[in-house]
Length: 372
Image 1: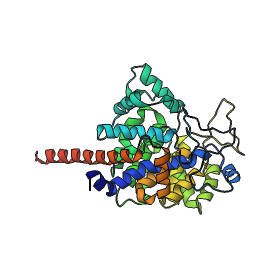
Image 2: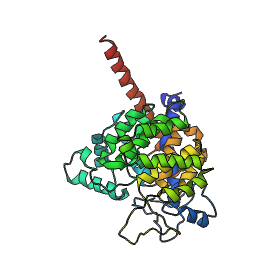
Image 3: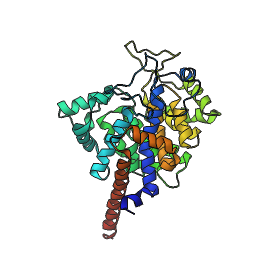
């Protein structure tokens, strides 16, 4: 048996692979119903969507395009820009074989990023990268607050496996390439949740607690109150259908738009606000007791920016359960429909990077112990 085959049998690999493929699957579950009101999803599809489906959408909604910040294929299982930018972070980690900084991600974006697959805030960051000498940690300043930072941050939780505090700090640094403000704090919150979920003895309550405990600026963050409110609603609800109704009634964050793309509460419902999406993703994971399939389905059927919400739930639930806890059919579909880059190979590299980072820490411990 090869070293790679041995690695793939470990819990570390299964959790690392579960994180990145779990995010991609959640992304693809939510993609075909993104920007829909939750009631319209159930009307249009005759109930909740509970499997990977083709991008069959009414004409007034976003449609798959080859070069787009949305899906670029109509095939079931196709992920969107969420996973595309997550994989760039994963590639940067694998390239460095360890924890990365904002400068490392800038280098990866400069060499490989396709700006045509970026939403407004990331397009702005890309333009600054290629046309200016603005330092990496200042590039995200002033960008439109949206979900682009937390939607891609899952791998930062993996490289900081079992260390949610460091995961939050690394996410806060790395994603400054994309955002400042509460979008950046939202990414740190999500990374901390993934790092906690990577623990072999992780608990659902521990994952939620880590997300809140290591939120930068704590109670002063704009993310704090919506997160606490979402958990209160999750405890009130009998199931995720009721949680969805309560969330729409009490915790929707409206986004103002000066365009024809207005919110129609009967069919289309729009938001790219992390104060809504991250609390929703974590609350769905909590309400479904960490079950991968149930939690990502619940998140996808929330509607609005549900590809991102389900993607983030997929990171956490994938880390919590490992790839063995994800329906094998979904894993096979994601690998087949999205062959490049190879998510399995990247997961192997990600697990190796965690081991490399661990060896660095062991070396540091030995050095310090030799001083006393």
